[in-house]
Length: 396
Ligand code: GLU
Image (tube, rainbow, N blue to C red; front, top):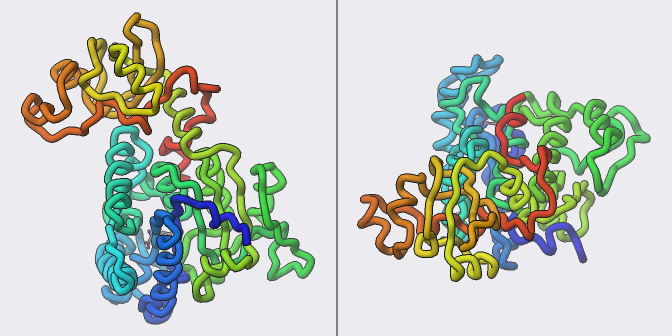
């Protein structure tokens, strides 16, 4: 059967506290998690890369500290998260480890996904972990965020992570099997929406009617509204999004078996969305001129190595956009640089293996990685909407 998971290559699965943690005891639902790990294994066996975004640190941690039965202040939640995150990481390590997978814990703040330079670092670490066959388990770094600098909910964190790593599919496991045009618990005529092609005002309005947070015991912060906010972020990054009922065992197997869910289709592929975002970085403050060999390599989809650079101009820092000029000086594209202008000058024309000797630290092999590069010929459009990675809409 053809489902949105059938042709997925890189999937982010978002797991909320209410699914993972027993509200009364604060205990992790280990049977559910063990079954979820089977779902992860199923995807991995068909070559899909899997990342998890998991909530639950506060829910699991509040018991440890005797913080039960009442609304917690921000700093109490943060203290709970500090202890609960350990419980959470152990639970994943145990469940995924039982099937032979290595768990990589990634704790993020909005600046890690929103600021270009930190975003490149976080992306590189996560992609490296995936390349080494680990399963990254992400959560917000709750212990250090203040109210203004938090993602606030993990639906949006999951969408930020998905776009940051160019995932093609984001699965939000929820207590409901998708989007309805009205609250199905109140309105017997509420209609399930199986697929959404565009986040039209009508679709966005549906979230207002279906506030699905409170009934899950106040553990999770994400209702339908945050799910649609997540959809906006994911779709802008070329990542489709699924809302799937996660309360039963093996929810992803259920999707593959054809169970009901809602899929939000993305109009573009993640790679195209990323190129558009890079091409739209109009504030390039410097340039690198490259030789004919490097230009040919870039046109063949390769990264820009220091060896192909003949000239560096302007002031820029790591992560900044720079103009790429061909041998004759004409602009051929834009890229996000892995080196500052000062360092680029020193390594220009040199072999990548010489970098550590020249700069005194182990840098990246490429000056501009091919994923961080947009050639003008491939650049269809630029514009404000091409900004799936800014932090601004991460904080409500
Ligand atoms: N990061 C929080 C936690 O792990 C959860 C936030 C959310 O569920 O949206 O407890």
